Image 1 (cartoon, rainbow, N blue to C red):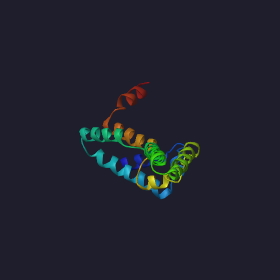
Image 2 (image 1 turned 90 degrees about the vertical axis):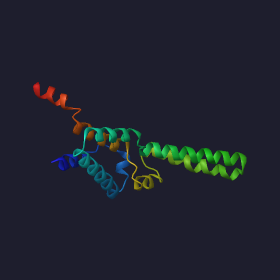
Image 3 (image 1 turned 30 degrees about the horizontal axis):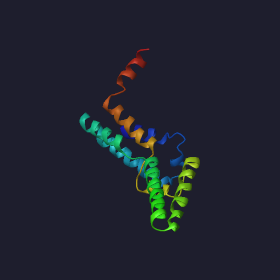
Image 4 (image 1 turned 180 degrees about the horizontal axis):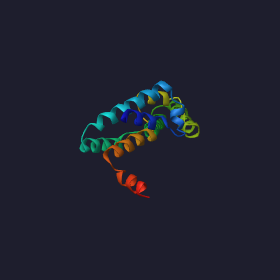
Length: 149
């Protein structure tokens, strides 16, 4: 029962530009791993669920990974261009348009690599959080109030 519910929730993706530009096999792999974790935690204690929720709050998403990598490469390129050789200025000139492309289109050349490494979108991380909170019973009062009306 849990498997079907989790699978149906994972299939109901809103317009997620990163997912739409990711190979279906990668999305399925990420969704499968999420489903396996949720099913495993369904058999565990509330403390285990709380620990996983804390881990999810610390997890880096695709946006953060992409922005951190782009900024490091651009900064290193600037430093090397200033102090080593002016030819290094090509590095930020190469990296920053990728960041702009991602902002506009939701895709850029490094993104497939980041996704293949298993880095999830903010929405995918939030889905796991909400599934775990539902397992823990965080929304039971809302369901009770809605059914009472």
